[in-house]
Image (cartoon, rainbow, N blue to C red):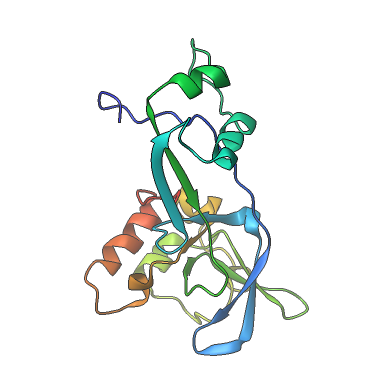
Length: 193
């Protein structure tokens, strides 16, 4: 933090691949997810954070910064690589990834294709019914139920499928679980990992 203001990213890049998840209690049920639809939150096992100066960072991290520069804050320009190497300021390098084989919690809307294939997409259903958990025939997807009275989910849920590898979210004994899921739904959670 700089004088109470959040730090501006010097470099940023995101990439994704489509993947499949299975249910904990039914490994035969496969649910397909488009990688571009995913936003990670409360990442635990797939998170790496290191703080170091640019010059002390591994060559691959330096290459990343130079190759994936973010837009400079308005009215300023980014330093040249030689200036970065001479600067003793500490940079924070972060990486968030969803690791193969991880147990995850997913928040989205389940769809069934005409071929029977299941996929998870950003939520488009009725948020009031979702929050109240009073769904008629909860096994039906939203397009099978139809949209009632034009009500919809909060905008943040419509943007992405949210996924966390925090195994505490799967535990019903943890008192923080409801709060973390509520944060995710309201858009206040740590959505970048």
